[in-house]
Length: 302
Image (cartoon, rainbow, N blue to C red):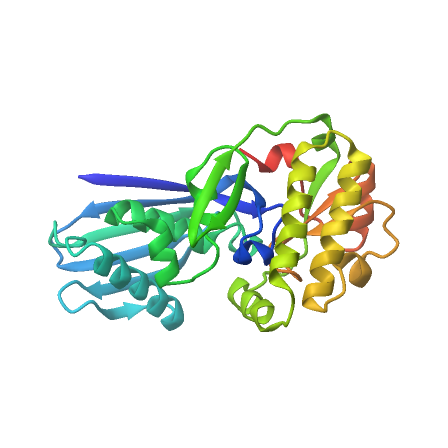
């Protein structure tokens, strides 16, 4: 019997870093995501293949089910990470991996791995579904983070996400003002390591409660306004607040200082996608600088 699971990718529109300290964040599930299929076998092994969006196998491994050790793998670091996830899932549900004599498993991404739309979070959520465990707990035991990406994996509309007393609160809402026609996502040709970025943020000496309050207010205003001018102003306010906290220049200051409209980083600063305002003709500016992956808001969200 074959089991199929699927999780949506994610983009964090507001709240990067501060969401870890309780700030309200706006996040969107994307049209892109990752599937996981499980077929029981008689091999007494886990035979794993991960496929990318171009149908190329980017990772393969075989594990012994009884000892939960690697027999062979194409990448030792990826193998160690995956095995750790499976073992942690089993610690949350002792019956996991006990209902068959072996498994043939395939994962399939619908977006390029370097885009940073949630290769890890979609994997965690898919494995959690398969193992019948709490995905937030599995995330905490493995990669860590706020969990907004897990929420996006499970939801099909924009969400407001915040951590209250250590627990995630998720609220779906409708978002379709006319200003979304002026929103574009531009890929910076660089995948950022979220764990390293979080570590740097946690090392900074800042008033986390004050920053959280500021970002929460900006989130509320950005998701409520129908004015593009106000939206752009709030994008800049958000960028400046995080810039001060990280002691890091904004991406506009570093790379796009002469762009006339608003630019905001998304997620870990310095990589993945940025949010920019403008129109189709405005995007020539980024293309001429070598940033050719540009996706309109309406084509990114579910």
